[in-house]
Image (cartoon, rainbow, N blue to C red; front, side, top):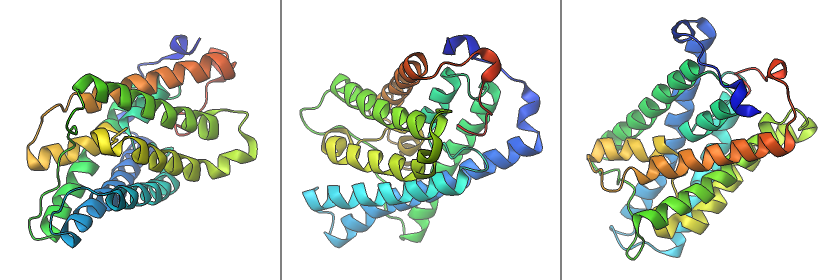
Length: 252
């Protein structure tokens, strides 16, 4: 049972050299991802003089996030596992692949990376706002929660299938591509409704910099719930491991 493998770890993990390197890697990967993802939206708004959202804008956001996440996961994979998402880290924790304390260190690094990326964008663009995630007209908070659960389920399920599963074989080499593609596809599906976050850190940075917290809880509850469901489903159905066969914490 995956829940039986959950471990707390120790506070010492935060000061161990490999833990520090992993946290730095998560910080840098998140900064790369958010800077490109948020930046693409800001660039589109500038090119259209702040016009209304359009299908072209949604496609550009999807492509930018897919490409940036592919790179962000790739550059962090050999150091931290390339989580680049507190929901992915939570899914790894539920599956017993990372301890609670190490996961919290990842969370702090990921959230800081997102905030710093948004601050850099704000400065580099001469004060343009990094808009917080928001619900579209006619979309309720619970509609958005369902969207986030389903989209993040797809993301974390992909992570498990391509990066965590010990039987992944050669498919593990395309994990960053698959992860980037599912995020891009989900943005095409959900971006017009709630922004398609799938990542609490991606929502957190813009919320901090713009100090806008409307419905912010949606972008935590949905992704964390979707990640937990995906981890449990994949672990219970497709990974048959004893507590002694646990994967290293650096491999998601």
